Amino acid sequence: MGARSDLNRQVGVTVVLSTTATPVQPPSRVSYRITRTIKNPETGAERKRRLFKCAECLKQFSPTSGTIFASRKLEHRDILLAIALFTNGAKGLSALQLSRDLNVQAKTAFVLLQKLREVLGAIQHAEKLSGAIEIDGAYFGGYQKPSTRKENRRDRRKLANQSGKRKCVTIMRERNGRSRPFICSEVEGAGLVPYVVVDIENSSMFADEAKHYDALIDLKRIDHSKSYAEGEVSTNQAESFFSRLRRAEQGIHHRIAVHLEGYANEMSWREDNRRRSNGEQFLNLVAGGLHSPVSRQWKGYWQRRKVA
Image 1 (cartoon, helix red, strand yellow):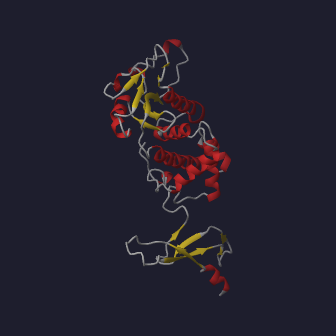
Image 2: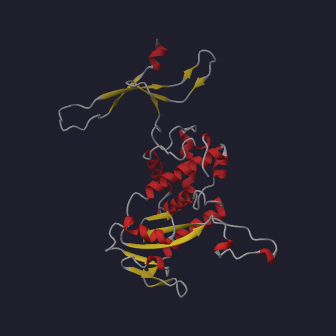
Image 3: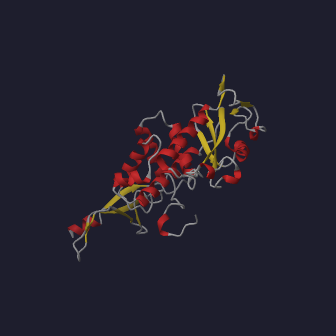
């Protein structure tokens, strides 16, 4: 009876189930059973994972149920360690490096990192921009190794000689503020401005000499063929983001075109939080992960057929 009473130990948790206007009703109390270390009577094996079971519907759940870490196989401490290692990388963290640090398969590390990048995307695109905003575009991916013989080399700047795998990243970045990247051409990026900027008429837009931004209100341009800055007119903050993303592509990840949106969101978050401590970044990412819903793209990624 003692073991059974420990197994069925009930812990009272106060939960407000209704938000009606009658203040006299006390909050309901729902009991949960916490299943601790259990021994299998047949094999003697112990299961140390904590299982929470609702006393009403008898369904099991865990602290990560309903979050982006749902259906996890890793321990909580391993996930927290992965987040700590992830925030410590100035230019990112590769899946192969994380797999060595956690002693897990590279596929496990890859999916976990992609889930974290999905969380960062939700954080970066949560609010609109305002004030002084720089907008610019750059191309990533689609690299082709030059031929060893000079006569066989081609000018990759020409469209006919490109692989077709290059993608354009358009960044809109507040000065000393937030940034939002988009995987689209500069023409499409200019069309997104009314949906991204909260108050166009009272915001100042800074861009280079590209013609795609002609229709924007209060647009100030800088001609990069003559100078990189003239007074307050520059796109140096946007170029700083592209520099970080370029170094991550060439030095860490190498091939990012397939999942470019996730990598762009990650580098955008790193740029915006570069002055914050590792502890603040860690807590920001943990809180974002626990408030993000189940990932429909990355949950069970290796258990189903994928369309490349």
